[in-house]
Amino acid sequence: MDNILATMSVSVTELKRNYASIIKDADDSPVAVLNHNRPEAYLLPAEHYERLMSYLEDLEDAKLVRERANGPFVEIDLADL
Image 1: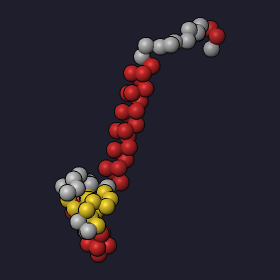
Image 2 (image 1 turned 180 degrees about the vertical axis):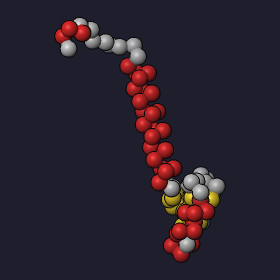
Image 3 (image 1 turned 30 degrees about the vertical axis):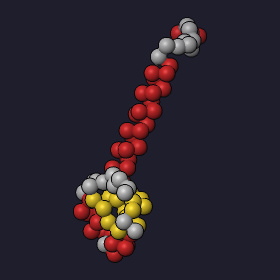
């Protein structure tokens, strides 16, 4: 059995027939799209996707900060700028 990582799920057929109402009912939550009762894809509202991508960028930046926290550092004189 496959895990469905959404509180709402629809079949591919239902998605084709009722796309607008499914998006409206999702109300900013992901929707699992099932094909033969197995998750085929996840449908995300644009705002949800944008927040997710922003969160991932923040995680990548935080990782980079941790990796670079102990140097090496380059010493420069402000007058040289």
